[in-house]
Length: 202
Image (cartoon, rainbow, N blue to C red):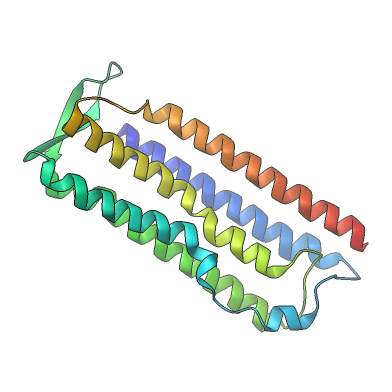
């Protein structure tokens, strides 16, 4: 339950960051009187696989790992652990496979839905917004969903590692903090680029 809670918090954190970026782009940057991006750039915005490259790649990686480790798992798989790393709860390997792979599929679909929504909104508005290329925004928003996917993928790999090799990779909470810190740095860099471009076009 702790792992599920942590992953849920990361997912909410990621969606919150996405909402902030989306609002900042469409509300604040829309005030720019001299947008650097032409209307043609918005109208030519179409779906491209690179917009959801990371979510799809992580989904395929999770499926590959599942195919490799699933035959090696016992009928009951330990998935909950004490602070010392010893198991305290187990599920069938079918349930473990479902709980680790289904969220990956859902998140990949969420990524595609986010990209589709942004593209549709941008094209329907019929105008350029702000000083940042709309393609860069779509690329960032679509691939940001990879954050909770990475956490879930690590949890899955750690479960497989313990049940097959009897050792843990690292504490899940530590990996979650590292992933969130890296995501925060990337988001900060993205915002700095937006601010710089806004000032240059102002």
